Image (cartoon, rainbow, N blue to C red; front, side, top):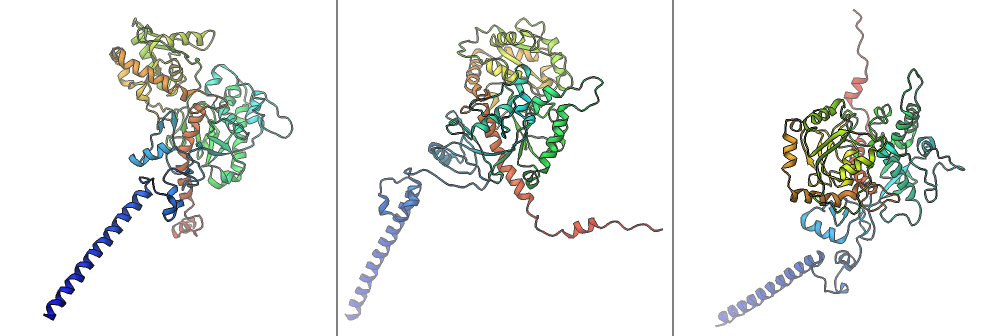
Length: 509
């Protein structure tokens, strides 16, 4: 009897222990899930005072801004909106172009009330390298004009198409003043060690256009060559250049013939170019350098209410027909298209009323030809975009501005050169594009045209803004290469290096 009572007591204790154990584990399990949900921001109704480490949780529930998240890639401030952060959490990436603004990938400082800021150190080069080329003369000790009240005029005509050096330098100078543009994407810093990029303010395209032509029987060096020589001497003597070997420097050479001599000595730097047509891949390439748009010469088509039917010309081209190198296709196309009734293919230039004629012609055309000339790119593409004339690009080696975030196939037609010069191929292809498809591309042109407009002060997502963002996307890779190059900087020479430095024995026999 005693044994039976003892057995019953043991069973009761075991049953109670099991219930207690199950209850405890269930509570712990529920609490663990509660904290997981709470930390991801899915539970928002609990008072922070009831939770441990409430400051940490408040970071995730939207009650405070995301701040001071330092990037592993340098000092860059990459800033996104909360909606973009949530979208990234779902898909793992952020759409580069969303809600009318470009968002930068990567780490950085995150603050929903700010915008992307690229820190730039700019050399105080003498005026003869920049605004002095425009006839501007400094007063006092300053080498820069006060851009709030005195902006030197830039020459018109073909000079304008390569004027990005002017716009970017103005943007850097303006960043130092209070109440600068709200669309600011760059700020000038005075300490080069704080900078993301070192900017070289040499107006190389203007230097070539004004002082690059060699006069007949003149054996003297042009002013353009002399400036390049002085620039190389100056840069290679700077501590900033020595520190990185020039890898973190930004040099503008938008005109294909600018920096012809200096580029071979300054190639570790990042170049801003119009294309790679006259560069070996060891000097310039898409991984290292930035492609920037031309400034279009045709004025923007404001209040464009045209339609597929109201543009009578099917295919339009006006420009130099007989070119060398990659431009040989132009004359082939001229002979193929000159007799087509709905195509306009003729010689034209900027002289006299060339701009006015091109403006009228592009605005009256459905499609505008952009054929490679002496180099893969030309200003004609950006004139077509400004005219909302769907570009037809025949240039196999062309590189396009900010193509890593912009899909040109949505508003451009690409045709291989080998196909374009086949009889009837191009004209039949264009005639096969119907009203609906053309209208979609026409609407897209109006959506993206502001990416190719230059302004001062700069505006959100204009060309200045977009170029700086393209530069910012190069910075992490530049920093990575720079850091990797320093791995063995403190190591003694390896045995292989020492053996290579020993001179070979002389042959005494």
